[in-house]
Length: 91
Image 1: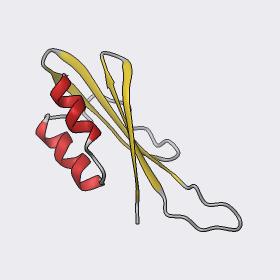
Image 2 (image 1 turned 45 degrees about the vertical axis):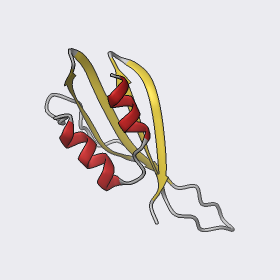
Image 3 (image 1 turned 120 degrees about the horizontal axis):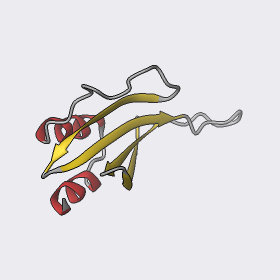
């Protein structure tokens, strides 16, 4: 699991996140994909005998007087426990 968490921490783009998801064989199969505000996708699977889930979402940090790029966040959970959150700007 240390390798998985270490690789997750080094993600700074959607392309890298998608490569991570593919490398570990995570999928949306069997997970709730009902439309939710600001959620791109939820994927999961079993890695080294442990349940792994990644939630990818976004938020808009702009306010009335400043336009800022959207920010993506990805949250990693292992065996139902949140262990990491990463974020990057969508320029």
